[in-house]
Length: 393
Image 1 (cartoon, rainbow, N blue to C red):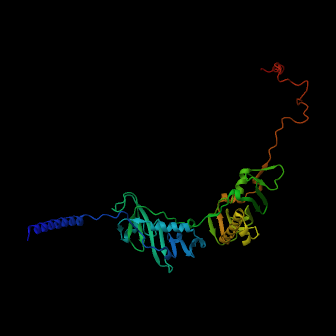
Image 2: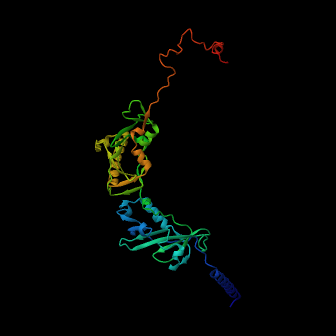
Image 3: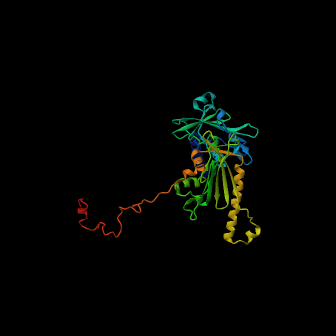
């Protein structure tokens, strides 16, 4: 074998030794932890969820799929707010965890992840009522000691079904009340859109109208010698600017809706709120009607200019909104807060007050009054006037 071949074989042998050493060091180096902790719930398909249960026992809240959305079973199947359902799913799916803390069920109570002791319990069920998955959020740990969790506060979480408990670096924000998953705003109209409001009760009725410049309110058929309290009238006039409810139900029981609040908008939409009171609580029903009965034909739309087209389009949209509003709220009874109820049912006597009478400086025909041009009248410019009056200047 030539010297050249021997040299090449020697170089190859040295390179093989170096590679073996490098590989040995790499294999003996500790494995790096993942950059971010894993998610507690993995592979959940929202389409497979038939119902969601929050909490446990008598206080449990059930959200049930109906059509494309969910309803709140605890509130007579009132439609749930889609945004809140999405927030709930996101909060559960975003729970990050570190390493397994324990899988011994005997530790659940101490960690607050037993269902009867937990602060938050969320369960997702299939259409056949079997448990798909869920999460139990327990107590907070003052100082996280798991290597994959950042130092600081941590919260114990348990994956359902099963006994495995993990430490999450951040507790999920999950709403647990039935009302939290309902859109509580009933009506929202702008002040400048209102034409008039009428408040009627068994012993009282009045109508407030917007002035032509929209900068004030007038009372129809104002009693003589009276004037309107502007702040009180404005509170009544804008009662539907942000009408919200605190609770909702289907059955009326023994409620008597003997009062009503009617709000007429400039676009021909009329909102009617019927009002009942029982046990110091106020209940209402809501409906809407589009009162412009003239039809918009295809020919009118085809022949209209841009400005006319916008007006006709606005008319069609207002008509559709009124129909949808009445369909959505038909059959539902809402409980509203006292401050909302006061504006909807305010008496006329609370809106008006006596006009201020002009102050009279002297009475007509007073024999002691000083008359202009009287030769015996005191000359105010006379320097001796103070001496005559016997007073010091």
